Image 1 (cartoon, rainbow, N blue to C red):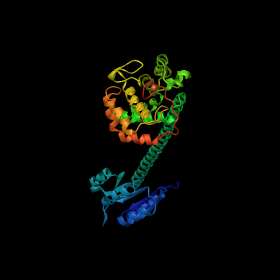
Image 2 (spheres, rainbow, N blue to C red; image 1 turned 90 degrees about the vertical axis):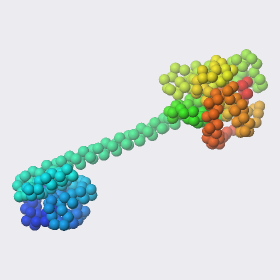
Image 3 (cartoon, rainbow, N blue to C red; image 1 turned 135 degrees about the vertical axis):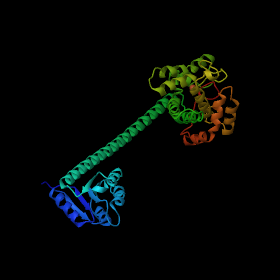
Image 4 (cartoon, protein in one colour; image 1 turned 90 degrees about the horizontal axis):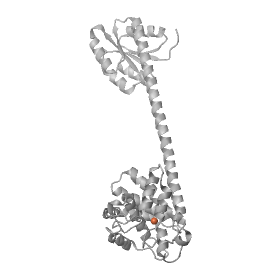
Length: 367
Ligand SMILES: [Fe+2]
């Protein structure tokens, strides 16, 4: 006989039965405890972990039938075998439906009792192992998911940071400020969200919009940095920053770079067809370009330029309103004013660190 770890609690109001089962199961190596009624059984269950309870169905006071759900609720890891008279097997079967593992009938065949106990404990062991495995698996999945999410957030953060820095490098060519691209890209995202674009697209716009002027890197300094007004030839070259930007950004498999290409090419198009480089009109202008245009222009209006102080908010809003249907898509203007509060808080959040601007576009606002 080998010593077994599992504790068995024998609950029966008859002392002779308790003794009989105790003797047999102890001889099989089980550690056995006894209880003569439901209250004693509950005390035993509270004081030490019990693997299996042999529970008499009929007892004075609280019966085994009444005790079973209490055991299942408070000690779910404890297996229960019901003990019943041969005449009452239907109740025992009902108990099994309510969570008992098995039932044994009186008078006991002790070998069958041992068999039933072994089977019940084996089933319990497998259930506990399975549950532990599931829990372990769930914890592992949750932990890996968390790690992946963190990694993804880091990559996204790094991507956005890289975009801002590279775009800022291009902006430095004409001494624009880094905060301009931050503000205008957040304005664009806010307007896009208001226009009903899904969060994924809004995020792509947020990533793509900062690159709208990346093509300035291809404009010669004597034009980009020329003090005073550009002549018509120089102006033609300056307008090429849209096309150059699109060429720099074309051919990428990354969705936000592809959208950045579209924005670079279309952010100076105007709703009435008077923009550049293609003179597209109305909805022929990609929506992302129409949205970026208003974000870019609003930021230019409210920022200091070498040739002007920042316009007041009131004046800037008036200009946007007046340009509804000429420069800007009326629906984009509508969305812009619907998120006016958000626009103002973005403006506040990304205030200029310094005011050194030299915007060289003949267009009165925006670059
Ligand atoms: Fe531009």
